[in-house]
Length: 448
Image 1 (cartoon, rainbow, N blue to C red):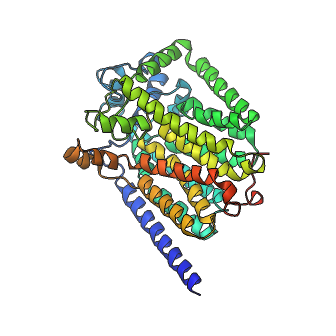
Image 2 (tube, one colour):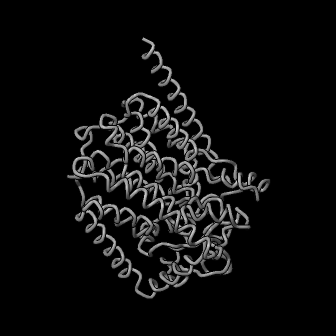
């Protein structure tokens, strides 16, 4: 009787949280076009829109602009003039992707920037809905259907990284949907489909290469081969559409961007946190910093420790245990992808929602006891750190040199590290928790 009453209280609390999340999201969405201290609406979309317009006007030589103005912001160029003529009032950010990804945006380039931003927002909202439906299906073994819906709504509707991605006009939700589908297709043994999607996001961002290394280690050769074929096909298609000289400019442009580290508050990688904590720069600045040898080796050591720890957990699993551990392994790799990259922007952390749901769900499957309660508490705290975000502009202006305030603005990084630690803990001690994890028959796995 008491247990049923307790469960009803917990369910009611989660339901209230989900409703608050919906209200919060609707409130944010109603103000999304309003510029703030930390974000100009569509500041990243303008890069795609402008580059697509230049491509349509046969001015591809002006797409990749090498400047000394910092990581973003292009002034005094045809790129800037084109962005202004489309209705954008500020200096645009630079286009940094493979030319082939301009093709879908050339459809939007025929519209003014304000109209293109409205259409892109609607597309992103449909993508977000698809992500939420897919996430609910993927966690059905960990939560009841009703609690699963509430958990998915709460995590997505309250997520500042998701709102920030929408406000920027970014492509992050496309990548997030692809990652969810890669996980789904791998579970269903549809490795070619998973590989095609992986090749797509690798050619877009490159840093998801860590997934390919993981699937190579797990001997998913068909998946890796299909991702490689997709990547090569996209590059060849890009060269066929836009010619080789533009791609030479693209590679030169990428080389120039990769020379420094970013200490700006939105960079939530290990390197970004180190630069904020131990560098005497402004946490509002996005000017690439020259990385000292000491900082470089410190970052390498910390990244190496993370990789070593995760690898030790992976190699511990053999045979049928791999099937049981796959959800946690995929979650750990996704979190590594987020924190190990030299630059990992805050909006990338909408990808942490699926791992957060999986890891928290695994914690609920552990047998009741102190250990279970501790793990659930830490995982919920991690979700809060990833989902909510402080008013960084005021915090930095008032307490810019304070290391505590700089840790506060690194909360998504901290939450992701905590989730990664929980995932590794459960994977490593699976032999002591045989009844705690979902049985192989409950989750159809793509690992034989």
